[in-house]
Image (cartoon, rainbow, N blue to C red; front, side, top):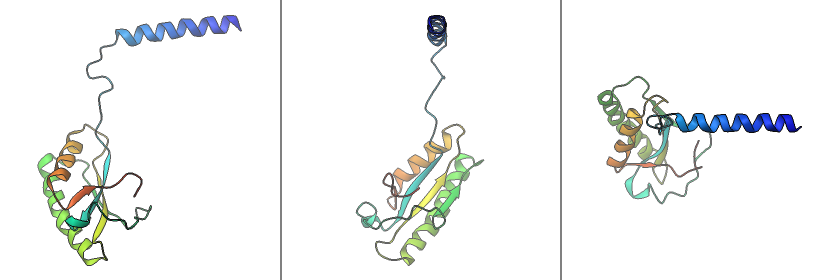
Length: 133
């Protein structure tokens, strides 16, 4: 038992030394969100909607931005927003629907672009955590 414990302690010390010697810049940086779940629809009802959302993605509107440039992604988001708002307004009160915007797991450029786009548009709000998957 002592031999295993000794060996483990040596390995732990080696791992700590290795971790200290690695450069920290660029290692383990924040990756962008792979997707955003948003609420789209009537502005005055986005934040006070108590209508529960389904936990299934089969009824959700989705937009996949894999492989898009920033300009292409913004154009596609604006195009989709019009469709999403029309769909929400044709639905029932509170005229708010969930949508999923998939950015991918690559670098965070598209993720940051989508985040800024969400903040810029009054008809779009981040979905409350746990309300829709």
